[in-house]
Image (cartoon, rainbow, N blue to C red):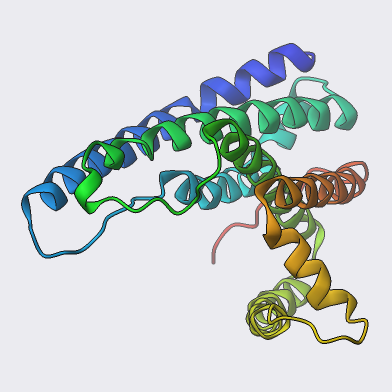
Length: 233
């Protein structure tokens, strides 16, 4: 089983989840658009399917490590081939989800009286942004799953506590740092303002983010071995 076969196996094993996800998001967007069009309460509606797809792909990235690695080892596939097949799958899934997400987000636009778009850039720029964001989240999920896979029980418990706390602190810090910077040189607030200035800048950031965590993902993959689950008792 080579790269092509591993890539096709990942597509086949995940196709049902992707089909169900896109069907649910499309149906919800359509139904809620119709409801918003007939309910005259002055409110606005935007499903933001492309943003929801980001979380879906993070979970897909987490699910792309252990089982795929066991399948690879069971068929004589090297760690390198396994990782490259994931890279192809991540790029394909990120592009597909970005394109379909942006297209689904056009459905509420059929009801202009209740529709307010989150993003004003052209659809092509939005697709590029969500592609890099999706790829970054898949890479992050893959790395997290790989890191957990190689940890002992105590390390998993510690990381499970540290990561949410760190994420909350980072969100609070970013929200405070995003305020306009003063005349003094403040690299973090100025960087955040640069990233938020346009989707092109944000896409560049998330592309670099994805490349960084793909490197980390390879580092946890190249020394990963088979771990047998212990029987409950």
